[in-house]
Length: 87
Image 1 (cartoon, rainbow, N blue to C red):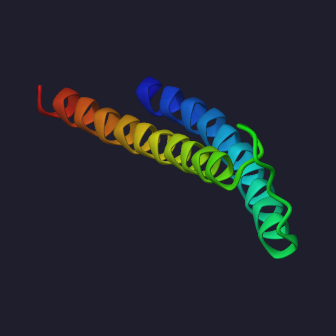
Image 2: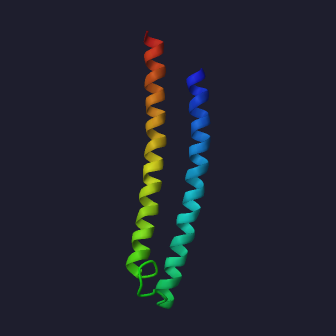
Image 3: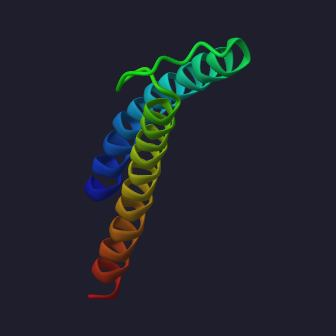
């Protein structure tokens, strides 16, 4: 049961962080759309269209990694619990 409690704690934290980062990604996507509509991209690094696309890709990749980490924690905990039950 202790492993389940640890997993629940980990999941709560992980999901909160995931949700926070998802909100950031959604906000940044809206900014990108506004810039696309108004043709408001700059020409320097950090405000060019390519920089924005890279930024969005990095946020998406980070979310994917977080989701995979949460999934892996679930799988590993389930395996551990099953091993304990079979021992």
